[in-house]
Length: 75
Image 1: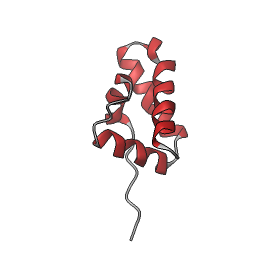
Image 2: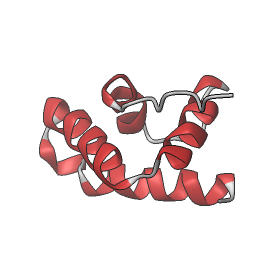
Image 3: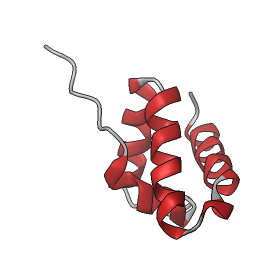
Image 4: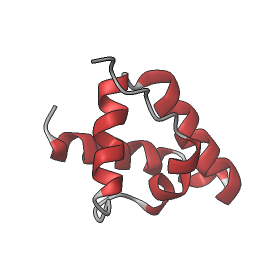
């Protein structure tokens, strides 16, 4: 998946939950990503976040602590 597509999808999810209220927003965004995004997508999101995540909606940045980071693949 292209990085720009991942950013667009994450920001769309954040926009959808903007009306939830500040605390519910982060929880709802994280819940959606945890439930529907495959581990490789979450890994790509965390790689982008670890690099600064400059184009991500602030709701994604708040939700990051609640998003499950996939375990590294066994070697």
